[in-house]
Length: 429
RNA sequence: GGUGGGAUGGCUGAGUGGACGAAAGCGGCGGUCUUGAAAACCGUUAUGGCGUAAGCCAUCGUGGGUUCGAAUCCUACUCCCACCGCCA
Image 1 (cartoon, chains in turn blue, green):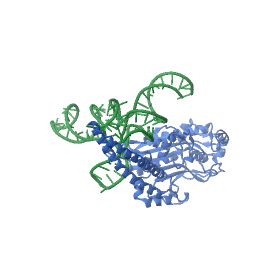
Image 2 (cartoon, chains in turn red, yellow; image 1 turned 180 degrees about the vertical axis):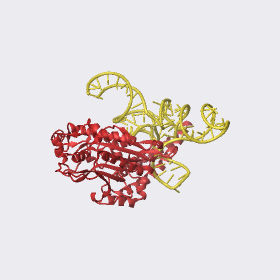
Image 3 (cartoon, rainbow, N blue to C red; image 1 turned 45 degrees about the horizontal axis):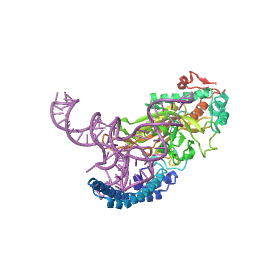
Image 4 (cartoon, chains in turn red, orange; image 1 turned 120 degrees about the vertical axis):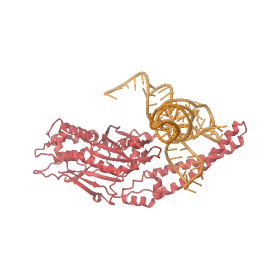
């Protein structure tokens, strides 16, 4: 979330940001409640100061074995009043916080103002778009032909848009996961994490999925009495990994911290039906290797660039053509200040598919999850910056892989870098 | 799932209604001493909020309650530890 003080002092900039992002939030009410809360608080605290003082006097009287009955009777009324005012302040503050949680991050200055995907900024392209001397098959035909993905039975077991990898398809998933993890841990200095695949409500709130996007998550283990203990299937490893340090103060010399994690990702994709859903493009459960960085504010933008390179290197190693675009204001994720998408080329689809979002959240998530660091000994703690990038999501890489390396007979070549992970296999089928 | 024990500052740990934001020790930082270091000694060492400021307020796992006053009493919950049961 944004700093309440920042909003107070930059109300028009925040209003403009909401306009640029096409998001509504009740800023006026926020300001009004904030003012009311602070007035109440100041007054209540002065009453408490008085109460504390008189309590000391009562303690003194008791110690001297003197009668304090009269003072105590007087204080009874004050105590009651403080209780009422405090309750009022708490409920006002709760409302302030609730609104605060619905306000997205401020985009970084280089973010183009735009109204749709077409306003994203193309930063670079990598690799030649491959050309073929035969008629290309789309990935789902290749996969079914090789019997490595079973769409029907995936749907039978869990519902539409759940898929089942089989034989060398399952092996390919495992190979890609391991290849990516090895790349990031041995070449890029990341420490591997294997986190829980479920996260509770405070954790989901820390990274910004809640409260606004609850409908996009699979929720289980609902408990009306203790909403905080509700569990959600994670939509990305970003959620558990970023929250590892929630409510902690790190020391400056621990930073930057680089973590990478493989997890399955679960997304209801609510409202996304009918849009690019064929084959592996948009499924409710998919595998992903994620990278998460914790940095100081000074270095986060340099770290953002190297994070992007780390993610790109996966596609480069696999020899898959891609481009990088920078999100415009309406495309930018709720918590992000700046975001690059890496989009891999689908030769049969003749389009680019998003396989990685590479974001700098600045202090937005750190403030929500209360992750701080001490710049130097004795200094006041500050919020760290968090960043993450997929490195990468698997299904769409599999799409590009199957289509890019397909042969006329429906078999698929395995690039050299992946062969050791495929038991030395040079070709599928 | 059952029974019992526990949760206090960076760590260990004392504290069962008023002098407690909290003893003591360890660790950290600064200093004295020393050519330098160690030892010893002295000092210092939580976080957040409100306020221009002085300052005030809050926080002893979390929420609620009792009380003029709660780390301390009551209550619900969460987590940790031990043992039993079940289980990959």
